[in-house]
Amino acid sequence: MTTQPNPASTEIPGIIAIHAFADNYIWMISKGSEAVVVDPGQAQPVLEALALHQLKLTAILLTHHHQDHVGGVLELLEATDASVYGPAGEKLPFCDVALQEGDEVLDETLGLKLSVLEVPGHTAGHIAYYGHFNSIPVLFCGDTLFAAGCGRLFEGTAAQMTTSLAKFAALPRETRVFCAHEYTLSNMRWATVVEPGNKELQIWQKNANEQRSQGIPTLPSTIGQELACNPFMRAQHPAVGQAAATWSQRELHTPVEVFAALREWKNNFR
Image (cartoon, rainbow, N blue to C red):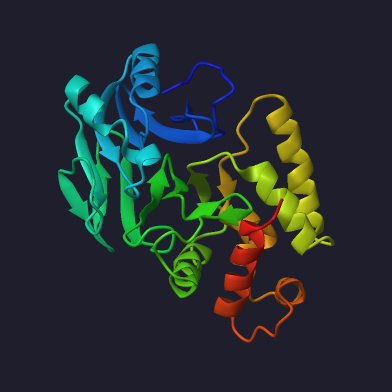
């Protein structure tokens, strides 16, 4: 599908960001006359996008149970015949297909094949979807990973989140990362304190500031960018470990301890 030019268009034809609430993105994947959406916290913006692009909603993909990700599901089901896919380990408003690690979501019309990754940490049963669209590797990660950041540990542990992020780190570096919130600039303000000498981060921050000044999403990022710039993906890097130890005023002996200190630091960063 060729999308109409708008500030929410991404670099991949057929994937657009639908704005919801103050800073959520609902990702819509489309080809021909059909579409899939990821984490529709609100129904109305999705219905408006479907009408604008003359699309039929065939599936809804959910990553976790938080209301700003599932709040629009029931209203969308009243208006469409979409099937709902979501994590088997979480209570959802509705789910046709409960998913676990290794399951696949296939849509032959869209040419979309996504594998399910279990990535607990932000919530206990959080999942992500990895695969290819238009021959480009894509990751729909909900609130597990953000550009230059990651989700808070509401239900999981630092060890779980460290393992979850390691699954993302193993993906191809060119994988586009479609997270669910526009937190990039605030994350980068913190990340540049953690690693003030990180030149790649400085360049990315400059570009992100320019994008936001024009009302353009900073997403998707890539796994390569996250590995180069995101402190949470760099817990084994000596400079990040030293910064976390200095901030926490204690010795940190493992990547999990470094991650836990980084998460506490970010939670308290203003």
